[in-house]
Length: 152
Image (cartoon, rainbow, N blue to C red; front, side, top):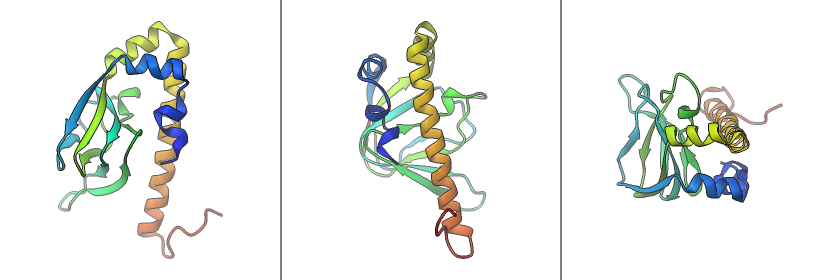
């Protein structure tokens, strides 16, 4: 993921500090599932250490890893858009330490301060756009006759 979508690069210090007041530290052991596709999305994380795989359920097969996320990256954006359910699953590939955020508390802060809300919305939108691009490239690598090559 590009550095422009990490929290530290995407949010101005005043908004980053405000968001971090809503965070609490959590840990996940390797192999732990953070969330499952189709379940309610009511929180999100910023990775401090370790690696998390975003995966897609494929009936009768192992989940397909779509992308891996590491330091400073946002895990989970489905809390931001209706119907507020996870579109993928997530699993810790190594021991992970992260900051966890309750979506309801973040939404309440966004509602109370529209400038903060706009900053969060722009950040999450950038993450979604980058993840869609990464998914497109990954699908081209897997299924296009000649790989992704260039994007001409």
